[in-house]
Image 1 (tube, rainbow, N blue to C red):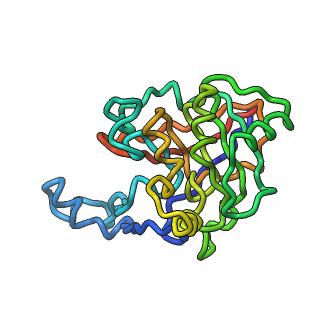
Image 2 (cartoon, rainbow, N blue to C red):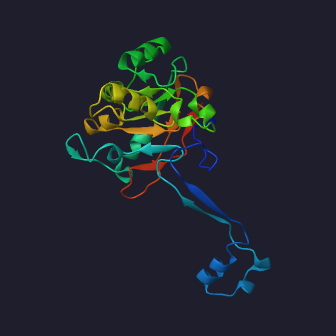
Length: 250
């Protein structure tokens, strides 16, 4: 068995537009708090050494994460949208499929015809609950200043087509499932109307699904023939949960 890490690390060096910070405490900096929690003096700890810890001020949408239907819209399929802690765990461990769109330029919007052509090329037929992952290799440039603007995206039409094939979890190795926000805004200015900004996200209003953003290392995987685990962290009432996404190959 071989395990491939499909996750980016949560770190302040990443060029992510969503702000976050990490405060590290080494084995001595937490001495005062540890003594207070334990109700003893600092002399109780050997060499003034305590447990190291970290404190994060962070969005659930930073790092590799799974978006819940609640992220997209208050309702989905006419019912209250489910939050990440309400999603069935069975969705998040299944056969994986990688569709390589590194041949498309940044800002390109993938259509259902594009998906069908890629599936035909690799000789694979989707089945319900496959986890479909879009590869564009934006993860290779995640330290670049323009990281959030250099990826391909998926259209609402293609997202709905995947859901119609029985896909409930889909992901991309980029900052967003949609085309870059800059591209969306340019399109909106040409045709000012609601529904252009975050169009693929808002597909979740019509049909329930989850998407994984900021995947990595999809170039290390075959098109299919492996398992994917993307169990989200259980955060009550949250619109997303971080995941340590991995692929499992025989």
